Length: 619
Image 1 (cartoon, rainbow, N blue to C red):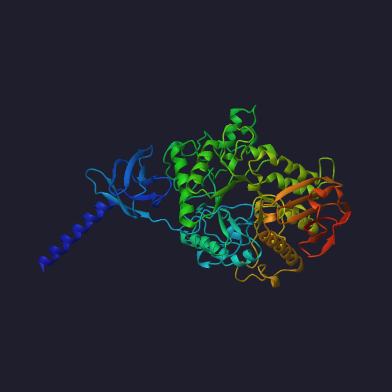
Image 2 (image 1 turned 90 degrees about the horizontal axis):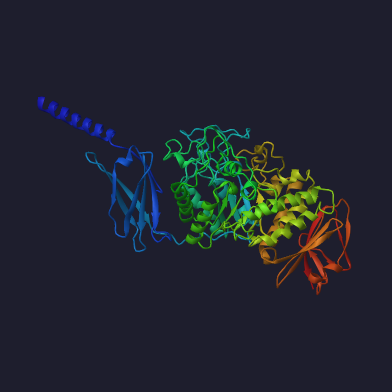
């Protein structure tokens, strides 16, 4: 009996010693990226390693074809930045990375090296596409189990609040891909899905707290891959929304800064001036330029110091990781002008080198054509270097279409602004890469911009789907969702029918009222015509100077010619056709692609008030 007690006591002492030793061991919090692939274009990967006083340890690894290139120690001893080189001949497998310190037990991390998958990815988005923008939290709730996640800072769920989470998720989007495909949509852009573990208003996704993880309230990394696969099986594409400029105040690196210049530091909170003009102004003050690029976007959105090489690589690698892991086809780049220009050019080169077919476009929210062109690639306005940005969000054409439908006509006012905006296209390397739109998650819905005038709204939609560039619809545009962005939550309402228990289901014709069905059918017919007719995707464009506040332009190729006429006037207009002979010679009829009716291409055409006619010319 005594011997048994002694043995038991010995066992307890051994276990106590073991647990004590384990408690004293430095904890390896994380390594990012958590895994990589063989055969990538860039052989060097920089791992960010975080753990209690991890910098006190020496790093080693032994794996055929993989070498430890350099270990960087920074201000914070809880970080190491480890460069490894993966040769082209390296095979997939597990790399034991050893963190060793004299007198301490080794920490061994099994780093996974994966084989690349030959799945669809990096296809790029171009003018043959129709992009549909979704705010995931407000579109559809396909999985109630992830509505509230214990342990996250925001656990409220309230569909009656414009600031709280509503429960929309990735599964809800997957459930409605058929609806989008039938409407003619070919590419899906969602506001960011990465984790935003912020205390409040985290639903929008623009204050990331993780770079490599989907927010669990939207789903999982694997669910995101499933979305990409589902899109690709339907011949559709996935656009990921990226934020280079800032992160969330609760980002894991903000809780333990790797170094003081990880983000821009100011003596007191300093907000950006939100003015891009000083970046191109030849007479600007350095202080104004610095405030634009280095000021914080908001109190909960720290501004990244992109002059820091560790920041640069951390962001670039995470973006390459998402393309390879999930099969992303294109990127939309948030708040593009606020970034360091040289970093974005460097980033653009890296993305293009790794995935030559990949494309991206930047949010360039500015008020003039020259400002917008300034950020586009090609150094076409003598900026001094190539930004590497293929396309921009075309705010200039947005301002122009609003003016065309709302302003009184004049020499420089009204519909002529659409004409004048396209005149400036000579400055772009390729204006077809710009994204044209009527509204988005930050702007007033266009149906409200035209004061709920259904005819004007349809006129704008016809322009959107027939002008040059890549058209983008905002969710709910097809059913005429309304509201002004004051505050922005008012334009981020739920899509009715996306939640179990909704009394109306706008995803179905039965759930829509007559006006909603009219708009839905109008968009679907025109979008599918565009989808099936390359002339509206890649055809050349010829425009004529507006007369009597009527704007006429043509899209044409070797196979077809389409004539588009916009009449924003409050009365029907008789338009003489003689001056369009460059494009109409040889044609005898014009067929309205919406109604299917044909009219003789006579000396004059009658254009209904407040309308845009899209007519395919026939011989």
